[in-house]
Length: 147
Image (cartoon, rainbow, N blue to C red; front, side, top):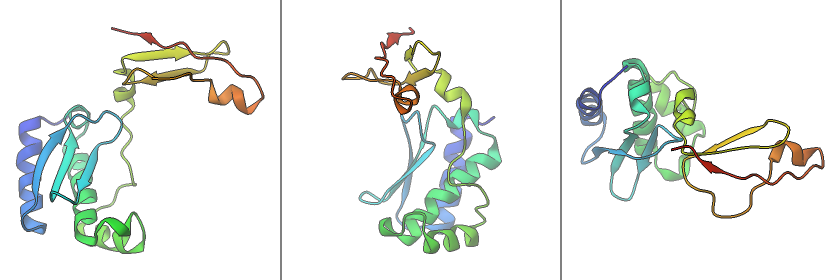
């Protein structure tokens, strides 16, 4: 597993090697590892999720975002992005699964059939079990604070 200090040093190294006038920072995301902020030329990684990653996974997340920065916002995960990502040495999938991160979710609900839903933010409106809804059953979810 990695530390925030190591991740910051590694991000500065990789960004410095591939991009000009871009910076790095941590964000508070809990469901995605990284993000490329084109407007302010900044790459961020989740301060919560990087702690679950190995050093090679941090490198892959950074290379993923650097590839986005190099090809621009309109490229998405299309051919130009894939080609650039491969040139950089990106070998991972589009996302890195971090299963333990979901367990940190503050809000939880379970439908009568046992389907579990976890949320990091308190749901603002009514929510129904999407799995049961496909079978025509509408079970209202009641989220409880797990803290």
